[in-house]
Image (cartoon, rainbow, N blue to C red; front, side, top):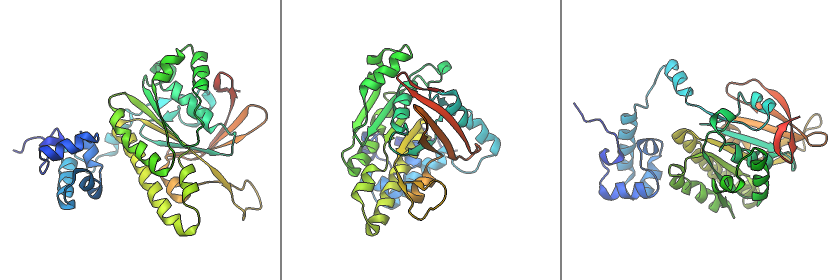
Length: 315
């Protein structure tokens, strides 16, 4: 009877040096290896792709990653948790809040509250579970220099939380270009486990890609890199049961003559990567309308919420 494999060091083909290289980049558990591609693992561990394929196959066998019954999937779904948005109406639209294990995308024009929601979630994830939080910390990647610690303090104080402590529990990275953005996400695995990260925010996920890859000639390269970037985020969501919240820019479709011509940037790559897609738009005063555009299990619908000095609230 073969010995049960419980650590990466027990995988066939993983020697001492290979194990050290993998552990250095945070790939220290079987799931991280099992969800890796052979080319990625080969590059990280400086081994051949054939060896990498064997290591990945052994990790997948150890985790029993074949077929399972729908009942087993239902049991696993019970591990999914949710973070409150601060608005009961908005939470209800999302089936209870922002879901772990998934990517939630909010897109909309300037001033539609995409970043306000990002700030609110970075605070709310730290709340006790009975208050709609996950008692965890947040990792915030800022591509447009819109993160404001003063706003975090304001939202935290409104909930009776210590603003300084809340800010200490937000791990912030300013991404200066798309390469830096990708690097920050790859480095995230180094601190996810150690710091109980339960939420990753990327605000906005498309800004740098859109600016740096202009014209149809560069579209394929842009989409390929964006796709890999989003797959890394989804892998973290799956592996660590954390929530991923991304914001996205919009553009106007010139060929739409009736109805709303607004469309999210990123094309089909982003449309398929996000589990939940929400279109935000401004209404009168401080009111915002959230429309659930895509979800695997929830009906389309709308919710109205308000942006107040205290944060995201019901109208």
